[in-house]
Length: 224
Image (cartoon, rainbow, N blue to C red; front, side, top):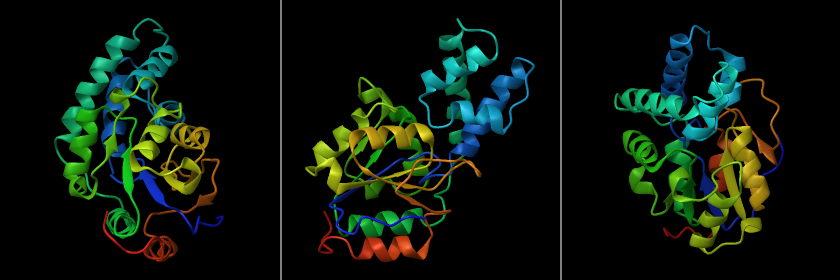
């Protein structure tokens, strides 16, 4: 499982599949895109797209479907389908709200998401977490989203805390690569069971009692 960074000065969370149960929305949308092209969608196909931006996921889908020039077209279709699914609502994942609020009471926190701003705001609002974050950063607000480090570096710079003193919570290889490249400590709760992911700490859920105990011991307990 690994150990948690006891002297962390900031925490940066991914959103989709980590804080909010939006992966179900994405899976429904991705399954529909694959079905429209006569292909099944299962764990192998999910592993190709999880954690990516809409554009990168669509490009991977286009290549897999034998349509390498259709990335932009599939991105439009995928975004529209995800938007439709997300409009029906998405719940916070187990332990997410409690952990976010405990961290917020102790140290600066932020969200760094590979979703576009529109979907990030919708997910946080739907899960009742929007008011927990003063700072959030979306894929369409940086030049190079995950797996590049820019989202995490931007978050840490805004929070005024060095990456080496910050903890990233992630669920996918793409996000982990971004956090690792930025120099953050990486805590991982995988979205896909059985995935072999790089990590400093690994757990099955944000509801692990160890996490809440850790968060309550951070900082000085002052809301930032």
